[in-house]
Image (spheres, rainbow, N blue to C red):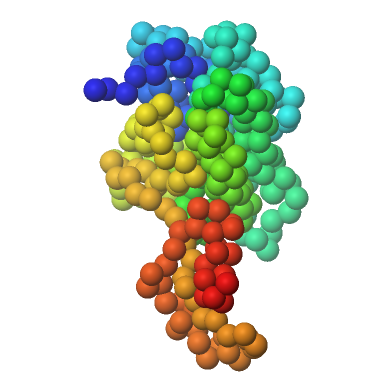
Length: 297
């Protein structure tokens, strides 16, 4: 049975092109009513094409779907709230938030300044807060909600010249981990994707796999995570080129000594890094439980 989103309302930020557009089209063709949010900015965050959202709305309508455009900036609390208000005014509710909007200000760390950090954090990380927070109270009241954030392998593993971008992207993983815990009793899930796709954000990279990296292949993972039947929460999926994989943060059993010294760590690094029997804690207290078990407490 196909996954349907009939009677669901989805907000997709940064949906005027690339991944966001693909997500909006996928959800729209599956029956969701979609709020297409996009300011029409360049990669660095400057306004250049104000009608990008409206164009995607027309594409969704051509597929037989329903959508409205929204051009609010999600980089401010007021703008994020306005996006959710657009959804409620148009469709009466919100069920899904896909935090996809992002900009780039790539520089080596040595040359990175506040103008390269603050705008990136404002859009990627704070933007997710600004849009999700007003939706969260609606999710709690209706006993249902789905949150998906767009993270990145740059955040998981690092990438040259992307200190601000990587910091924002890994911050989003911390956000969904907390939302997953707090949303559990309200039937709200929160997950992240690490997309691998050819978009204008990645067009400057010489990628031999470019022909295989259609953004729509990432949207399949987003649609799955947004569906009411998906029970995953607090998870990170790498998606691209038709492949889906789990990305996770684990902890080794490690080395324990009551009067631990720096020299002890130096001499027992093999045990510290031995990933045999590693664990993936469900929250920060579960790592404390691992320590307690080793201490016999």
